[in-house]
Image 1 (cartoon, rainbow, N blue to C red):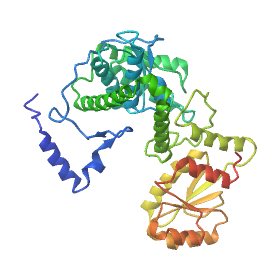
Image 2: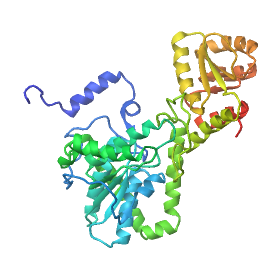
Image 3: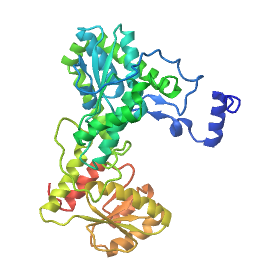
Image 4: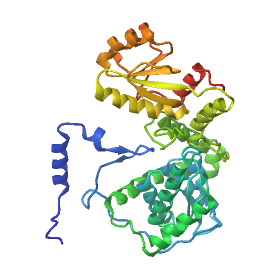
Length: 419
């Protein structure tokens, strides 16, 4: 086997990557920044990753309610990053110190490999602090949604799988946005059909996960030490530092989803236009909350007897660019529950979005505006033509830099969708 697959050095990988990039910026193209700002390279090998951590990981896990000493899931569900959840959990455990081997509840999240590394880093951190650790992993609430609910099942399954691979002692799938029976059966499938309970530390030796584990652990340890230097977790919480940190992280997450730098499928991208939603029970902050309220506003408007606003994606000019921009606007404006139509002829609609190329807009827009009896938007943001297009009567622009909820609420109001 080894003779058929000779080793490849990190230098050889880097040389091949440089050739494939053809002068493009390595950092911008291939290095991923986590929500906490950690830089993750596209690959890790034995040469580039830290030494494997010695982590005692259980060979089997259980389900059901568990008495916990520290509930760190409340930090995650309030917006905390993985680094913050780790640091706050350890700081709270040290402050409590009622048991040498505390049971800590961690919540899952959407970044699969990061969640595996988070639980592995937790064990190493607690050991470094002179503590043992039992982990109860639960699925998150903050990333579940009333929109396109089937995605909640996929999110919960991914989180439970990451918890099993990461070495949780107990796993619980919370019935947030999914049926309670399905929540329970996720664990049966993972344990009985995937046999995940029979392997101790299945992630050991995976250099990418080892590197993530090391990075998370180091950053979380620094954060933990800063809390300790400031008087410990009690002082941190009472001074308002905890809530300030969580508020800042919530704001950052909301911004990422509002600008679609992060995606919640069915919520801020790839909406299901035929779906009629009902509000989820409010149980704290959820990243989808604002967009759910926007969608419900449209549904209530229609339920009250009004017509659903219709958006015509008018494709003119360059065929490739007009199709690309129509696809973008379909997913963008569809998040408000508007009816979306596409075509190459001007037809009756509540709103028209002209989809073409930047170079063609100065010629296309005046022609469309002269015929349109409704507001006209431009798909994209042609900087050199913006002033002229606005002077001609264009009502706005929809582009990659647009704030999704702000844009949708603006056009709900302008199209008469009752609040």
